[in-house]
Length: 174
Image (cartoon, rainbow, N blue to C red; front, side, top):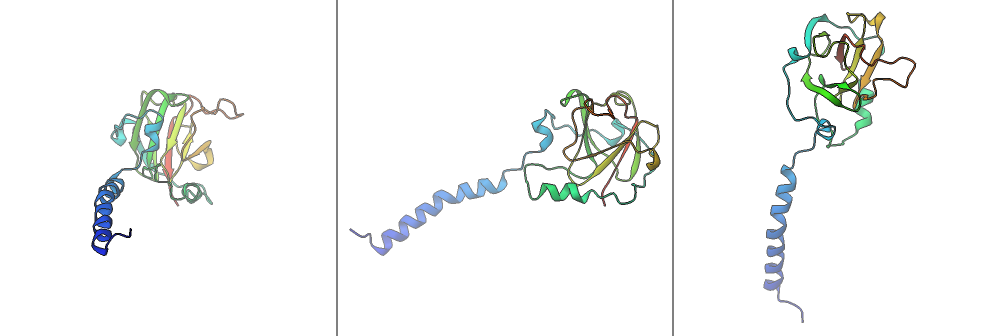
């Protein structure tokens, strides 16, 4: 038996009324921030909690953070903003950790407890951060660079370990 036109309309209307709340609730689900997956508690510290600005930073010629952004595509699960940096004093995103949004193109000199203790360094998508052990952000002294999602190894297995050596850093986009 074929339902009447009015029955079919009623069935479609009922189906839509059941699905509409699902579609609406799906639209308001916020993407998960990548830092939450590694243990961040959601606290954003003031930029000054990491250190203080020494002044402007000029990135090395030919540097482009756009490659990191292009690798991300449209992944909605990885949110943040350029200048946002998540750091921890131990490898594997362990120990004391903090997240702060730093001004772009500024040399940030780290204060205690971060100076010479960072072992995990993770910038948010859209930026490249340069780290130094020289106490300044002179691009001629550039030692390490980080792009999203960062590095939680301290570089221990490389020939140029940065574990517990970072005294200052600067983040930029281009």
